Image (cartoon, one colour):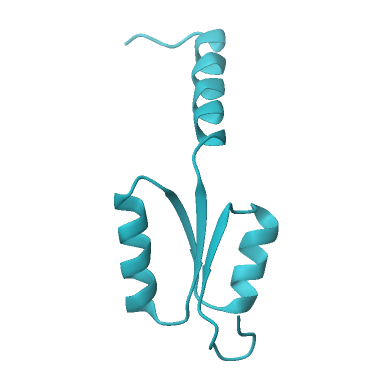
Length: 82
């Protein structure tokens, strides 16, 4: 078994980090699981990095944790809507 050196691991981690910095990120917020799943699938097939949330509060938390370049938002959700 061959172990990776510390510098090799650091270089690989930096390459992964830098490549993700350029990927457009989309946040999909919708309370309907089927619609949200479909939109996420289509955006991922288009090559985008997609995060998702099932309601407005979870969407706000996800956005503040890791801001997205674009948000696809359902405007009519229970409790906290778009």
